[in-house]
Image 1 (cartoon, rainbow, N blue to C red):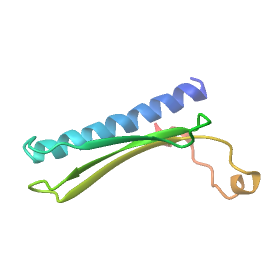
Image 2 (cartoon, rainbow, N blue to C red):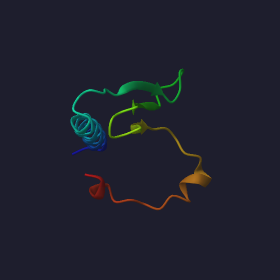
Image 3 (tube, rainbow, N blue to C red):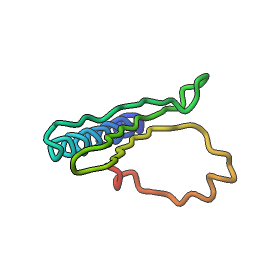
Length: 93
């Protein structure tokens, strides 16, 4: 499996997790309150990813809930790369 496929699978898993959290919270609120969703992009001029945040406010159980998802990418400066410890990709899947 190539790296792009692994990235897509991981991203899709986190989006599914975001959906599950929001669905469960709405069920706890007896579906009387809905999340407001806002999508964003890291850069307007370049394709560097983005994300979505969802907010539910003034519920019967939750005063305010936020469930966020980010998928950003790009090149790190060389000095910054050296400071990031390696994470085995298998631990993300």
